[in-house]
Structures are given as C-alpha cells and as structure tokens.
Amino acid sequence: MTQTEMEAVVRQVFMALQNGVPLDWTDVRVYLVIAVAAGLGSVIGAWAQAFFSKRGEIAAIKKDLDQITEIQEQIKARILGELWIDQNIWNLKRETYWKFTSVLSQLSSALWDMMSQGFLPDKATPNPGPEVILLREKIEKIRDEFVSLTAPSRIVLCSEAIQVLEIFHSHCGELNKQFAGVVATYAFFDSLKKAADTAYNEIIDAAKYDLRGHDGYPGT
Image (cartoon, rainbow, N blue to C red; front, top):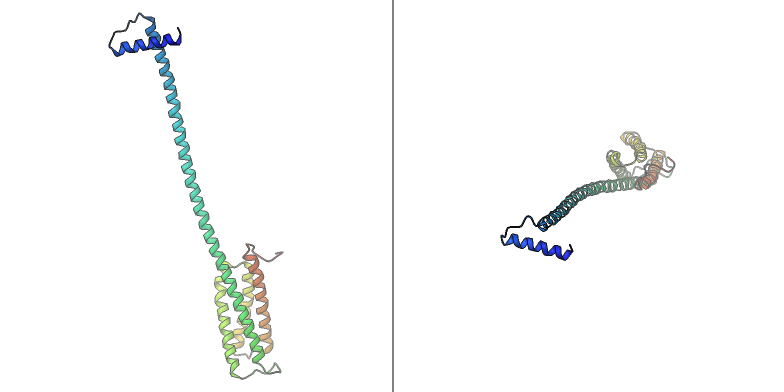
C-alpha cells in the first residue's frame, strides 16, 4: 500500500468515526489505521517524555546557576568587606607613621634649640633666661604627645617599628628624671637628640616596608 492509499484509508476511517458510522471490524484496513495511530501515539509519547525531561534538566541547570550566582555575590561581598578593612588598616598605619615621624622631627628641633639657647657658650653652664623655660615646656609637650602614640601603635605597626618606639620611650623616661630634679646637661640633650634622629630614620625605614606589605627591614 502506497502512502497515498494509506492516507486515504486513514481519512476514511476518521470520517466514519466522526459521522457515527459503525466500523467494519472485518476490514483489515481498520486495524492498519489503528496500528498507525498507535505508532504515532508512541512516537508522540516518547517525544513528550523527552521534551519534559529536557525541561527538567534545564530547570535544574537554572537552579544550579542561580545558586552559583548567589555564592559569587556572597564571595564578592566578603572580598569587598575584607578590602575595605585592609584599606582602612593601611590608612591607619600611614597616619600613625606620619604622626610619629612628625613628633620625632619636632622633638629633634626642640632639643637643638635647647642646646643652642639653653646653655652658655661653654656648653656646661645652663642659661637662666626665660626662653629656656619655654623650651622646656615645649619639649615636655612633644614628649607627652609621643608617649600618647605608643599605645595605639601596637595595634597597627610592624614589630620592628614598635621595638624602635619602645627603645626611644625609655629615653623619654630618662628625660622625665632630668626634668624632675636633676639639672639636664648639654651632653644629655645632645644624646637625646641623636636618639630621636635615629628613631626617626628607623621609623621611616620600617614605614617604607610595612606600608608596601612587608613586615620588617631588608634582610631580616
């Protein structure tokens, strides 16, 4: 039976069903149409199953992609938060180093003024003039500012910088003793100035490496 004949038989059977005409079940062609319809039904069923299975796979993939996107957003938010913290810590480091170097520079200048104006030309006899009192008050004020910075420096500065500051802090303690009763000599102020200059240079070196992400001096 050709395809054209098959189509004619199928059309005839369906028209009979539509018009309510009983089918002749002895006609082999009726069973042939039923077989063709059944075959088409199985093909359609298989296609439908594959279609909905594919839709299920797509839905699962979409769900996975949504979860991946959510995880990516969480990671992005965490990274941004960590970067924000790191940036603020770095800013605090820079500000603290700047304050220390500024205080040490001011102290060095004040000590030089004391050496220049606080003693007579022989460098052994203190100058009794009123400017010495003002210089002493200035040195004490700068020293107090330095001491106030030593505590927070332990939070953000590198270990080498903290060690430098602790060493110079001991010199500040000696300055307290000198100002408390003992008459400070020219040699004492000279020694304290040299210690301030050394601390200044070492803090600068520590800051260069600490602010670049290195904890320590070259070769340590």
